Every structure is written in C-alpha cells, then in structure tokens.
Amino acid sequence: GQNIDQPTEMTATEGAIVQINCTYQTSGFNGLFWYQQHAGEAPTFLSYNVLDGLEEKGRFSSFLSRSKGYSYLLLKELQMKDSASYLCAASFYNQGGKLIFGQGTELSVKP
Amino acid sequence: SAVISQKPSRDICQRGTSLTIQCQVDSQVTMMFWYRQQPGQSLTLIATANQGSEATYESGFVIDKFPISRPNLTFSTLTVSNMSPEDSSIYLCSVGGGGSSYEQYFGPGTRLTVT
Image 1 (spheres, each protein chain N blue to C red):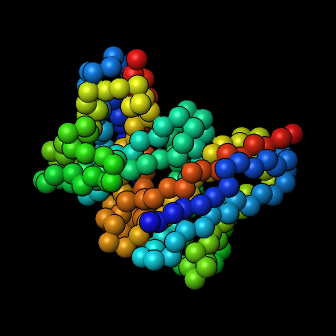
Image 2 (cartoon, one colour; image 1 turned 90 degrees about the horizontal axis):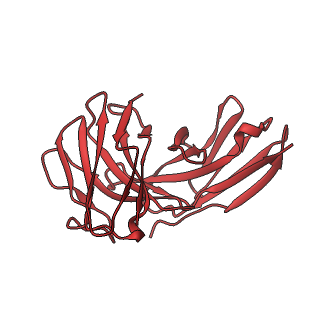
C-alpha cells in the first residue's frame, strides 16, 4: 500500500507556529502536496515538494526528506482564519498523476 | 491555474436513482480525476478519466456504479448509479496543471445527499 499518515487534529494559539507532520511510504514516491480545506469548501493547493529541503511561501513553509519518507507543513504567525483541515497527498511514479491523500489534520487556532 | 466548475453544486436524491455530475474546465487538460469525500473523511480517488478511452478505476470502485465519460479535453461526467444513503458524500473533480505544471486543482465539489 501507499499509506499516508498525519495527525488527526491539532490545536494552536493565534500568533504561534505550528508544524503538521506527514509520513509516507517511499517506494515509487514522486512528490508531496499540501492542501488546505475549509469546512464546506474544496481543497486549495498550498505547496508541492519533490526535492529535499524547505520551500518557503509567505507564512507557510513545506519540508521534504525523501530518504525518510517525511514531510511537514509549517504555519507561522497563526491567524484565526488558518483554522482548517490540512491534507497531505503524495504522487507516485507510474500512477498517472493521481494523488493519494492522508486523512487530513484538523487544525484549530484559538485566541 | 485552471478554473473548474461542477454541476450541480448540491442535490438531494432518492435511493435507487442516479445522478450525473458534470465537470467543466476552462482549458484543455490531459488528466482529470474524480474523488469522493465522505463526511469527516479525507479524499479518496474514484477513477482517472481518460480522453478517448475508458476510465481507470481504483480498487473498490466499479464502472457499473460510477460510469464516467470524457468526451473531450475540457469536460467529464461522473454518474452515481442506483444510489444508497452510503453514497452521500462530496464528489470532486480535479485536473492537473498541464504542461510542466505539477499543481492539481479541484472543482468546488458536488454535495450529494441520498435519502
């Protein structure tokens, strides 16, 4: 299988930093996506990592370690509007571009 | 980025009936995907819609239950056949960015309730 694992839920305080981890099986792995999904809405693309290292995009950064089968999404200066589900998804070679999603991490930002 | 629309946005259907969901993209794309998101769950891929050939279904999904059409590079339909309450879900279509773009974009989803 190609299990994608991430925590079910996390809570953090407004203005703080939170790191959401994701692990995946490395066999045939191609790239790692992060999506944000607010309740009742479609997922929106946040980031894509294919090389090892940290990719920074404003308040959000995403990290990948291909050898460890590990990624994280880092959210800085948390705002109340960041309360959402964060979905980790992986693509695999010879899988025609489809994505395998983790179960999602429900992030609650408290004042 | 691709702009994707889906019809209908939501529907309430009776058990045993069928519903066809449409997905329209504003540009030609090679890859189109159909996902299901059951209440409180993450996304599960149903099938890849291939232009000019039959769709490729994931384990647990069959053509008789979820027939898919892909008549051209900007449009696809997913039919949920002989519905039961267990089919109540959000159905989303997704497209690849095309060319060298790695991004995948999602449509707004169709919220289906089966009574």
